[in-house]
Length: 193
Image (cartoon, rainbow, N blue to C red; front, side, top):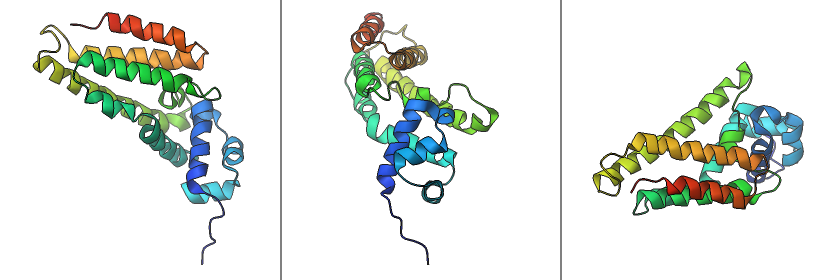
């Protein structure tokens, strides 16, 4: 008969998410994770599997709990409103927590060791899915006449992601919310009408 878990799995996952958000995948040690979760390493392994599995669960929770503004944005009536909603909410999220700024998806592992390659690929796939959703939304905007005939939905989606990723990096580097909002305003000033 197995032992009853003596810790809250959800709280432990939330704690691990914050560690990964702050330190990235490779920067987060098991000592960091167990200390934040308040459990011993065997209990963490038992509950979540290995570090990669824990990161994947944390990433899924991040998308579910913190990026809920994206599906809302995709339903807004104009492409510019979509872009503005995503940019300003990303700025809020990237600067909301002083001890873990930036974006988990960007902080996770931009570059890493060969052992971290599966995590890097998972993050690339997640970002590609986001880009696809944006491209499809901007294609719809073009078909509805919200974007001019010369607009390139794939380039607009890539542009928006490039600005979002830059904002995440700048937030991690300590840029102020006001500066990041000015960056978003500048990006939106170039939006095709």
